[in-house]
Length: 523
Image (cartoon, rainbow, N blue to C red; front, side, top):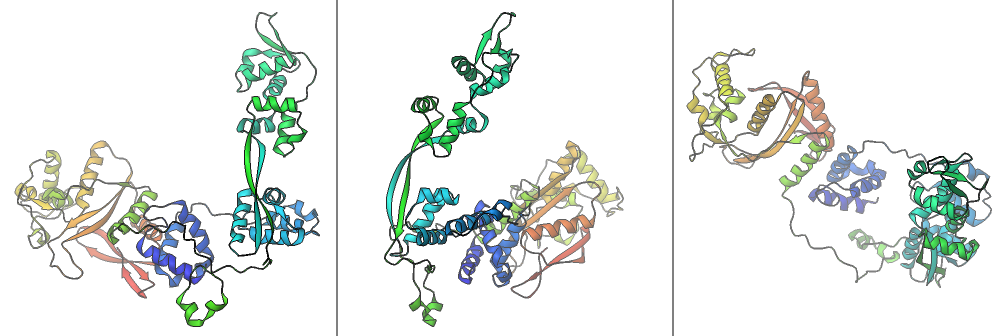
């Protein structure tokens, strides 16, 4: 890709998460394949590089890019231009092929051609040839075309199966064999009913009831499967070799269908040449400044084409990032926690997380307290008592805080200060249902009574993940974050030990920002 295309994609990914907006699609992987050829240039395009690294993480299986031409090509004569074109196609069939150039070479050396014939000779899908011809028509006077229409007979799905595996009646005859077979056994096969009727009508088999059961026995020693033979002829474009009576029978059995195939007859135009330059799509400021536009050709505008619909709005940058993070969590096997409870009791927001009731973070200077309703009254009683005991006296390896824990403080309603309150509820629920390994995440609003400034608001979003499993260690946590940020397109990470009052051990995560040329805290 050239610089202008990379720049266009970089601008696109500054606004959108993926090629088609905010949902991952096949277009992302197709574009990724094209961009990979210019990977060395991506350091100049921050948004494009982030997207590129993000999509790379989804590619679970490496692609085998080795192209083999096959030993049979070594024995082919390449003296004629046509053989050169066939070999060129076969060798490159796994990649992009310059079909327009092959057609120009063919036109120059062999004269006019029909697109149907050339597609069969080259082994190229006819629609690709049609597309190549239309691209050549964009160059004025390069080629001339005439519309053609041809009625062809093509095999249906059932016809293709018979051409490959034999007709139903022939398959029945093979099952009957020399010794015969129970009719019920033949009827178990998909071709049984029709095959028996056709084989009986052809005089290949007979019905024998002398043994008390219905058996099929052979009447002839061998057969020739004319249906399969002539279906293969039709598949190879030799329908003229099929007897009219048998062709009617094949049509009646719906093994073939008639189709109208449109093609082009292509010949040289008054400005024909085998060397063409790709027309420019856009007139850039650089072309005007350098004057290079004077020697370039530009693609004609198609004023009948549908334009790009005006944007009806965009996701907020926070929502854009949130959609990307959700995709990554889902891809890593996490399930999403319900986060629609903005008002929490102090019990779930603080006490269940073992934050002491005298801690400054629970003051009105840091927390929004709700006035109506001011209190909560519904708690799991046995769990509340266990939490109270740990706060007051300790337990489970903790010495506790050794103070008089009060239910009145736990009842106070607050705007949740973190989504960890949601995690506490989910872990309690998990414990009641019986332990099982889980991976959960949440992304939603939290509220703090902060002093507002350019970098602090009273409302912000928290990304939270919880993994419940036995035998986990800090190394597992570091590996999880490394994988998460890799899927975000961030690969250069540092982990720094730090102190947090309620988590031990604790770490800060820094990533190197290519644009700012410095380490930035990311988690």
